[in-house]
Length: 193
Ligand code: ATP
Ligand code: MG
Image (cartoon, rainbow, N blue to C red; front, side, top):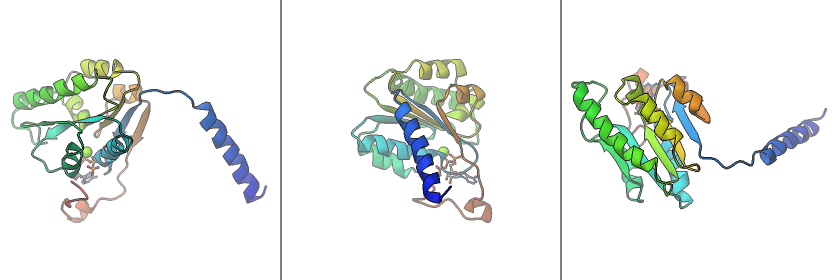
């Protein structure tokens, strides 16, 4: 078979699959794994949606005083953010404070997950809230499952819970091949945050 014939067959197969995929559905996308790029990809998706004139909202389950270039940009484009004012910073000092802070962000996220006017909800670093048991997994999965039918949700974070992976429509695991940090290079403005 010539290269051209092979390409033609491949194209026919791909075209047939594209034609067969006709369902509209709110997608649950989970971006997990230990490699760099999970939150970046989630914010890229927000840009995609907002660029089409859609509405998006972002819950960040990390401390809000962390610099985040995307947050400043997207907020100025009308994207609401919920971030932890205090609490979770990877080095936990008070489990009670962290849990209260997580719950506050979750309350905003829950309201967004009921609002059909919001096309895309990002739950950045949510996986840790489930692995630390800061949020109740049944409640979180139920809220995601019962969201408006066409609303998309993106969850990021390492070690995604098995039940979250099972529920998701699309799951990508980002594998670290190498990372500059391991060579002693600190997080870089504009690239890492
Ligand atoms: P990013 O925000 O760059 O997309 P991420 O969301 O995939 O990264 P997190 O686990 O949320 O990764 O980590 C946030 C910070 O840690 C970022 O500054 C990122 O560059 C850095 N980081 C991500 N993966 C690694 C790694 N494998 N080793 C060291 N640092 C990492
Ligand atoms: Mg991240």
